[in-house]
Length: 310
Ligand code: PBG
Ligand code: ZN
View 1: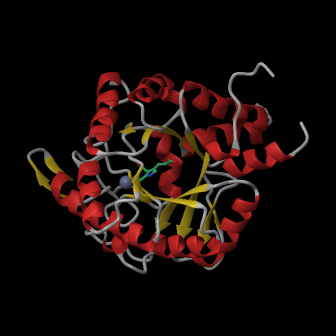
View 2 (view 1 turned 30 degrees about the horizontal axis):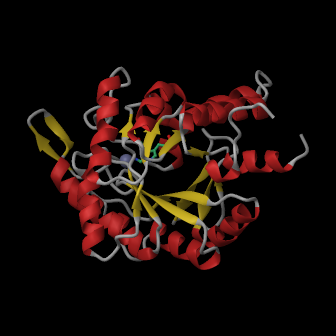
């Protein structure tokens, strides 16, 4: 009765890997219990999640082809676009959020267009903005309720907002990966989404974990550019930052990332910690810090535990 924070199913967002190359699910070794789904299972999966009381998904696509310009990312019949249309036709009220990035679609694995810079080959900000605009519009036209640009480009939210508005898509929300750290905890994701990079790293566009002021500023800038929802990623190691960003007044999402999932899962599988208790504690902590939404690979498990007798 006196517990301050309660987790609710409506706090949770379920990340889903959809792979255009599959006809059956495929396990993700570094994320035990997680799989990539084929497009033909997305409809029934969405229905099952809805029946569990879950109301939001975040789609991450693995395309058939990769190239330097990430052309698979903005095709009308691309993997994410297809998954959005399927989910919206089966459970129209499910909130469908799409990850807008290029790292799964580029042959070099970086998050946008790369080219020569003063310091060597690296991500090019402005050409990548054009690419993100096209990806976001294609997701929104397919029916996405929320687009979630995750590339950490300068001016990205403002740029996407203005093309969405020009296309008559004013009602589509933007959930910016506004404060995204250059984190080692995305490791398992790179196997899950086949998005490991061929050279360099992401430290030129993701935030140094030691920089609190910059982390706040990045979310503040995105708020000013018209973001509807801000995000801190990873969540668990950055709760101080999340609490500060919540003071900006916009809804905030915390993303419990692949490495956070894998650590809890691996320890639990060895019997070193209790999975349900550890997961619940981790998510309660993210909410306590000020998150309105929690993106977690554990979401379906948590929904199931909520339905079980205490
Ligand atoms: C795409 C993207 C990444 C994640 C979500 N969207 C990879 C990255 O930023 O390097 C990571 C999520 C996770 O680790 O669970 N850019
Ligand atoms: Zn990316």
